Image 1 (cartoon, one colour):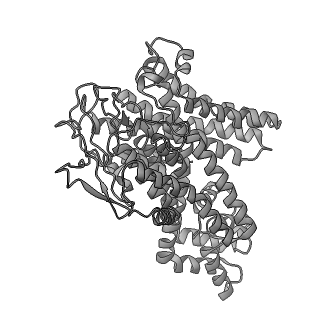
Image 2: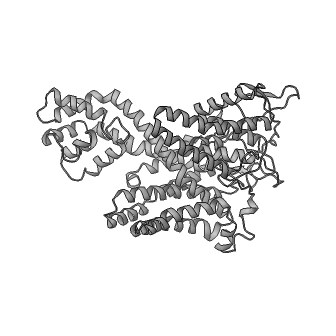
Length: 546
C-alpha cells in the first residue's frame, strides 16, 4: 500500500501485507525508528513513556531507484514515527486531513483498532456536535463549555481504550488519564487525532476508507482486464465510499433541486459536469483506464471538490488579512490621504472617514473581502465613473458603486497618481495569493491522500493530479455560476461556458504533473516551491485568473 503524496511508490512483493509509507518531505524519506535494544526501545507520547515500534528498514536505494514499475520496487516503505502531539508533519496524510476533517480520521483510526465502527463514531460525533450548537444557542458561553466537554469526552474515552490496547502506559490512574486526554482534545483535537493515526500506521494496520472503514486492496477495486472491459465492470468494483460519494452528488445536486422545482439549478449541475467528464474520457478512459482504478479517480475528484476548496478558502482568507495588515502599515497613510483628497469638501472629516473605510467595513482593504473588492475594481476599468472605481477598491459597502461622496475629477487625478500602488495591490491579491494557495491545495489533494496502491507511471501521476484539479474546478464553477443569481439563467450559462474555455486548473495540474515526473522519475531535485512555480505562473496570467 502507498500514500499518494509520494506518487510513485511501489507495492511490496507480498501484497497481502500492509506497510504504510512515512511522509516524504521534498522527496526525502524520514528515518525509521531504530530498535537498538529491547530495554531501550522507549519513547514519549503526551509525556508518558511508551514502547516504541520496531521498524522494518527500507532496502538500500528503495526510495530512489526506479525500474519502470515504481520507486522502491519490492521494498517495504519505512515505518511512521509516532512522535508527540506537535509532530503532525511526520505523516502528511494524517496531519493534513486531521486539520480539515478531524472526525473522519478519528473514525478511521478507531475502526482500524476495532474500538468502534467508523460510521458509528461519525454518527455519535454528529449528534454531539448538534448538541453543542443547541447548548451554545440556549446557554451562551456556558453551553459552549458543556457542549465541548460532552463532545470530547467521547474521544477521551476511546483514547483511553486505545492506550490500553497498544500497551501505552498512562501513569496507572485512569481518571487522571481521562482528564488529561479531555483537556488535550479541547486544546488541539487535530493534533491528538493525527497522533493516533500515526500510531495506527506504526502498527502496520491495513488501509481503510474514510466513513465506511472498508479495508480494500488494489485488486478489490480493479476489474480483470481493466483496459478492455466496459464502464459497468469498473462501476461494480467501486468501493462503498465512492458509491456514497456519487450518491451524495446526485442527491444534493440533482434530486433535491428537482424535488424543489429548481430545474435551472438541475441543468447547471448537469452541465458543470460535462467538461470534467470530457477531459477524463480523453485523458483517462480511452487509453489509460488500467493505469489507476476508477475508484481512485473518483476519490481524488472528491478530495479536490471538498477538501482543496475548503482549505483554499481558509488559507486565502488568512493571507488576505495578513497582507492587508502589512499594506496598511506600509501605505495606510498614503491611502488615507488619497481618500481625504478625494472626498467631497475635503477636510479632516473626510480623512477620518477614509481611514475608517480603509480599516473596516464589509470587505474593506483590511478585511477578508479584498480579493472580491479588487475584482470589482478591475472589472470596471473599461467603463463606469472613476468615483465608482475608487469606491469599489477602498470604500466600505455604503460608498461603493456610485461614488457616494467622492469627487469625480479628483478621483481621476488620484488614480493616475497612485496607479503603482493600485497595481501592486491588485497583483498581490488577485494573482499571487490565489495562485499560490490554490495550486498548493490541489497538490496536497494528491500528495496527502492515502491510496491502496502506488502511482506507478507518469501517466498515473498526471491522471491523479488532473482528477483532483477537476474536482476543485467543478466546485469553483458552481460557486461562480450561482453567484450570478437565479434570476439570470442566461448569465449563468454564459459564465459557465466562459470558464470552460479557460480550464486553468486542469492545465496547471498538467504542469504540476510534468514537474513531479521530472522529480520522481527522472530524479531531478525539485523542492516544493520549484515544483509549483510554473503552475503558479500560468495560473496568474489574467486570461486564466478571472
